[in-house]
Length: 636
Image (cartoon, rainbow, N blue to C red; front, side, top):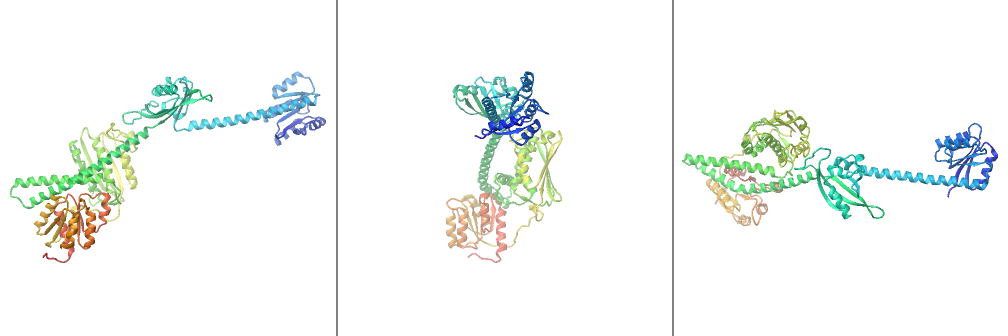
């Protein structure tokens, strides 16, 4: 054990030498002949026990002890006096708060005992001070841990009185931690649902399963579905050192946002399922639509004498083409968007989106005004994402005019460095305080079940991805207009379809055409179209039969369906090309999803026709073939 340091202060040198002689082997002894010299020693050396003579010149021992008490409070102070001056001694004790006093003349044995007790007192006090510092440090750390927990922590005793509540728990239930401590939890209405669970935990002395409850915190109702803020919590019994039950610990957390995300995930999964279903239904419709459109065109081309019949056929044709457009738009919207960016005609995408929602707008008495900038530059992006932007904004505008009807305006503007799209409505408008929040995730003004509050947030995220902007201009009672800016793409202007040059040849040649499709009506339609133009037609319902025929028969061009049983159109294509690499093969399909688009477009197909097709779509391919063939082949 290390020696203790003592400081003896006396203006008589012999007294100092005496102390050195007595205690040199037991303590490290420092000496001073005055109070000023003693203070200088204390500045340089750690001292555990100080003995000061009461009567000294300049600074008395009593005055020195007062200064030591103020500057070095941990030093144990002893007073040495040779006078039985009770008043002076009492003053020294009161002012210097000394541990004890030594009366001259002393006996060495008593002096040793007194000094040992003084030093032991210092050791005990120092241990207490160290323990106190450690306890304070531990308490401070524990206090900070409890305060910093993101989860709420509530501790109640077996009498259901608050022992502790951290800031997170207080915020969840609208409590004041200082006001709550010591009070029964029955005093707080927001904890009413918690009470039976806490009681059950005390009775059963075991953890209870995770549960959820709805609360109103600080008087603020936070909606999630039809409820308020949702709190998830669990309870745990609190045992003492003797294993007796001391109370209950409640751990809780606001799971409102988590539930919203779960609901959105479920909603997204439903949308994905609906998209797959819609895509499947649309593909199934394509084949019968092709037959309806094709035979209607053939009948119209035959120029029937009956005017009524002609008008009826034209009506069938218009409605079938309308179905064709709806199916095409539906497939675009439901299709996942993993393909690379392409140049997009913004005007056309807007028009197709409006057509997809046309019936709903009409039923709600909403007039649509379209003003498209001519020769608009292309926007390079993903068409499905662009249509999703337009779809969300148009649906929001439609919903804003749901009760009263009104006017939906859609405009495109060719600006200097960007394309501007404005979608406006004549609805009730958007209040200024709501405008600040409309792009926030999960914020919605619609009733429960009418919206998730993610539409505009997703719109903004897509626009941000393309480094565009979106803003809203609205005043209460004056409608709302959303303005989108999109960066211009490279290349020339996107021309309307009517201005696109078609590859036409006036030279008509009799060809040997092979049809490969498992749909009997599709083959019958195509066969009639080609026979009407004097071509020679062979047809097969199986890819295997077509492959065998290519080995022996002379064929000029093949029209091949993509989806067939037993062997797919893609595998049939590859085997035919392995037999006759130069033989032109036209893919005719209604199933060109993104999952197979890259594979199909990677094939060396002569052309690709999307179902439902028109009669003229087939004839254009024949004209293209004749134009590019460069020589005539006369069938034998």
